Structures are given as C-alpha cells and as structure tokens.
Image (cartoon, rainbow, N blue to C red; front, side):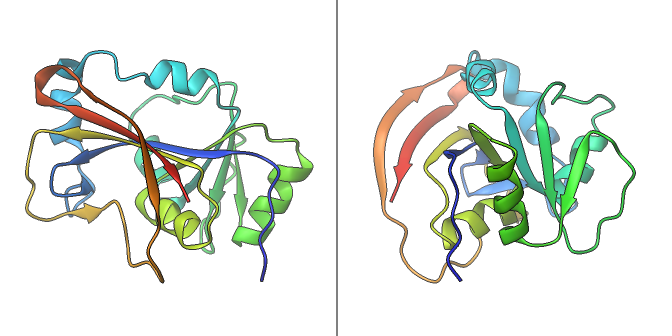
Length: 176
C-alpha cells in the first residue's frame, strides 16, 4: 500500500539520554521537573508553524491528564482502532491511510507527529520529514521507548545541534 500526503511532517520530543519518552507507567515528571532548566527549546516557534497534530491514543490520554488543553486552535487527529470519544477537539481515525487522506482533504499545511508509536509508524512508512530530539540529562533505565522496531535503517541528516541549559542538548535531523 502506498501512502501519500501533501504536507510536511515533523517531530519535536523530549527524551531521556537512554531513549525513553516516559517511565513504564507513562510518568513524564522526570522531564517536566527539569524542563524549565533547558530554557528556550524552540517549542513555541515550532508550534506556531504547525496547524495539525497527529498522535496515538496513549499520547492523547496523556495530554488529557495535563488538566489543560495545549492545542487550542490546532486540528488534532488521533489514530486508534479502539478509542471512542465525544471530545470535539479531536477526530479519531482508525487507519493510517484514513488519517493521511483526511488531512490531505482538509488541507493540512504542517503536521506534528507525537508519541512513540506514531513516530515509529511514520518512520516505518517513510512519512516523517524532520526529527528534533531534546535530550534530558537523565538515565531512566526502563520506560516507554521513543523508537520501536523498524523494518530497515532510516537515514538521518544532522541539521543542527545545540547545548541548552540544565545539561539538555537538542539535535535536529532531516529524515530520509
């Protein structure tokens, strides 16, 4: 199956030095408690250029636990075969093909792909254009990995690396 799209896709995500985006129970306190020390990570500028977010059910449920909705004014698409919700802020899609078709038809301009499983899915299908990793100076030892198994190598071209505050680093790659 060939999956087509008419919009660029990007990831910007915080990760532990050993590659985890959350503890095994989904906790991200290890990141949020250190995050302010990083200073300006470029997140606000990144989000200003995004009109659509694509995430999986787990990421959506994590966002709901924040107590506020951080994506006001953005289209939010959730890819899940099991989620049922009447949340008017999101649209649920049952397949990647359905998601990509809908976003193309809706005129998506720039899509932020969020969550470990979604990032892996987009990488596996050759659908990711840019990857920005903000690495926290912590080793968790176990947790939810950013990357899952891939069918083949994914070539990355390093575009920028910078040291942030609090021991954080950030690397931006073009994918493919």
